[in-house]
Image 1 (cartoon, rainbow, N blue to C red):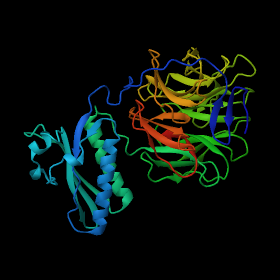
Image 2: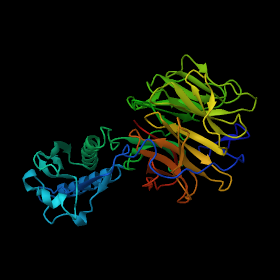
Image 3: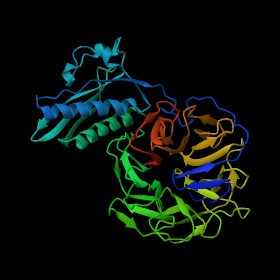
Image 4: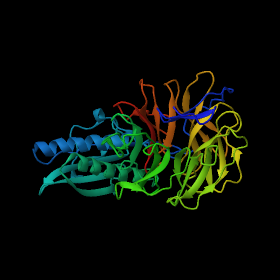
Length: 450
């Protein structure tokens, strides 16, 4: 355990910044749809998803078709914009081709659906071929919204990717043009190999695998805007340094080693710069440099010799603002400044101990962790930057920390110990549909790819 401040400290054993200063309880906002919206204020869409049948009695094809159906259903159900029509309300005969759709069976009660996804699968020349449709069943004169033919490899990963791709196209078509997140990934820290290493998994928890194997302490993974690199804190040299891993070369790319603590990297929206915390000048302060470490510039100047500034987060929409955590007011609080360090101001004034700011993709809302004296635990909140309206997203479920927005602005990933140890969870941006993604050993500090 390495302490960097009496009030803000990096807990090396758990990769979390903890705080322990009492303050008044912040006002609780009503939980509900926040300004970013789950479906941008639109009503949820009733959609039916008929199971795709395999066109031949091939055990391998049948198994992969079942996988496709499960992934497609789960992707749409977890999207935050659909009300899934229960399969118990479907007609007995399900369509697999356009000529088999009986529109009234889907628009009338009990199904009462607006849209219908259907299709079929086949093994053609050793490939998985998926024919997929999305119909507006309330427009029988011109029902086709999507008609797709996918060719995939006959294996699980390719089958899942095909289902993710079709789900993404449905979500983008019906969800205001916002792309789905089903092909995105999550980076996180896990100790399941015996060391705290950087891991990556699909957005739904599938395909969990390590990226680093340094046998040391690796923390705070952060994706570059084009997802080609991952910046993180590495103790491989014995000193906490900023490391940058390339998914193209599968090796680290050069970044300078500075003396003292170097941690919490954050990419600028254009991927050309990295902001980070460093104690190279004495106190932990926020610095910014080009992505190769050149043109180093110090952004914060703590008012006292014990002030800590840490955890920068760049506004992804404008690139002109950086949020960060500072204890300059006596307890850890979230502050904002321009990207050149000017126009410093405190974001929250209601007290408590605030940590881990992360911007929504539209640059209007910040999710963060907040502890109140009465409970002594952390919960996830959001604050509308313009109005100051605060919404609490997690309640009475252990300690919840380190939120991170999905690129669709509809989902947030975070860590929670509610199951007895720290695991990775996701939820919709209004706090509903909280789901655990990891189960093996301890997992924490997630970030979402773009």
